[in-house]
Image (cartoon, rainbow, N blue to C red; front, top):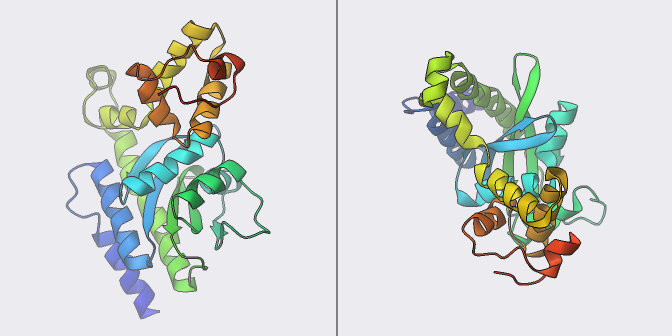
Length: 252
């Protein structure tokens, strides 16, 4: 019991001294890697059944893995928020594991074998999830799960700070501090690319997002990566793969 108390203290101390709420979330994720014996951690913000951004990560790979959940519209963090309970997968490649086929294939190809999603709540609403990743198969120990649940509760604190920062409209209009950081969570490049697809292919925004995600999946890219390629005009929208609404082709 004393070890669990020390673990919780170390996780809480990890956020002390952070300059911004986003920095606090990053520091918490790095502490999870160190203290919970996992290889990566990230905090996803979820709204209306879709991921809205990565609110903290232990590194670029963890951020990329979280991005796959947005790209494919499926994954453990979405289920954790939807059901308000942890989603613990000790072996993503197990024959009995049939959930999230696109997400599973992508993250297994990135070297991830196990994932654990713990819901993050603000008051009574689940607004995101703390995702923990492991390269090796195996369940978390009971103490690690307890520590992870405590970290998920801690993750709500900087998120609330961010949501509460500069709540007057003048600050919002200027894009100051918390508002600017919160806006940075949104995948702006995806919205820009979606608009370009709508204009080029004469489809509605929903169909444009479907085509963007399909092409991202076909190229083993995230939605943001392929969106950047479109916005920077490194990827042509004239190919038959885009016209047909299915992924494929080189294009880049």
